[in-house]
Length: 154
Image (cartoon, rainbow, N blue to C red; front, top):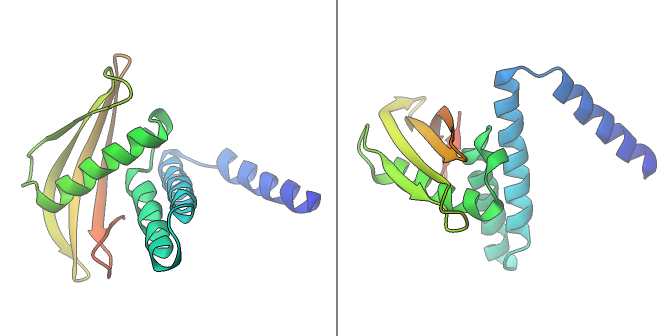
């Protein structure tokens, strides 16, 4: 078992040390999806548990990137709900605001930029902005609906 832990740690170290900016975003999204899936696995039982795993993984993956590193778990869940709501219902260039329930000094916004089709999938480009401790973290992302109708970062 110890050898497997060393192997996994070595692989993660190798992957992280060779990454560029784009890789960091993908790595953040993968970690977000894994954490979201794990958290989802701790909720419910039977079919409800399966749905929680899927939704938790999707939530972590949509948030992804640098923003996932600066928000708490609860804040990520709150902000992800704003992202999902904005992608579902907001017109292009209409900002949807968010404020952390844990820390009133952390705010954010989501701005859907445009709608388009790609490989018969509904897609949207959008901007995520978080303001924390007088710093602004901004990321542009693109998401498309998967076959289940959920948003996935592309």
